[in-house]
Length: 125
Image (cartoon, rainbow, N blue to C red; front, top):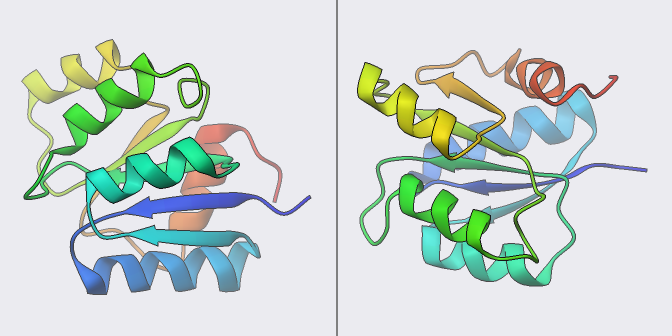
């Protein structure tokens, strides 16, 4: 069965590059959200295999989105991978608390991001 991934990032270019990589190289379906609020709405109503979330977003940051996903029984089992430009040591502790499946640093390689995701989630490709 084809994997379905939600990409949550306020940067159009990042969303597009990730979408193309996941769809073209891995053959996965993607859904894009431009904000954490939109991403939460999609996560609550759509069957997802994973969520990629940016940390720095204007309306609600990725930390808060992860907290809300963890608090909701409908979404707490969906693995979350953080996509971020800034990974501070204090952030790593917070990611551990939020039980994220992995962290991908920006800039990332669009030719290999899909394989990084598959490896983090233990998916065969």
